Length: 99
Image (cartoon, rainbow, N blue to C red; front, side, top):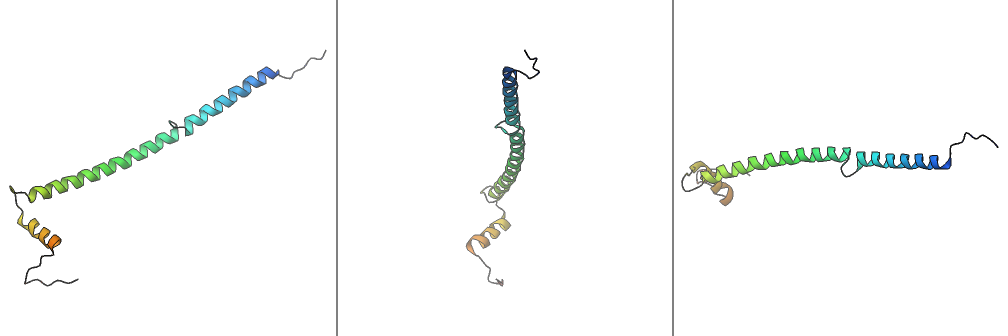
């Protein structure tokens, strides 16, 4: 009988299966639905959405301010004149319009 130093077929199958599972879980941890790359994408999207929210909040505050200034309780004559000129194309008789 010969004394063989070759590993058995079962051991090779075991290590192949362990390597395959390890590779799969490593890949999933890096590029899967909840992986590292996805977490970075989520963080970037979160920052974009925060910036958009802040811009919308500033725009809302500006609209609320203009609405209050044109309300019945508080009338800003300059803003009313500006709106009449912009929306209606109002021009006074003593003004010259250059286009």
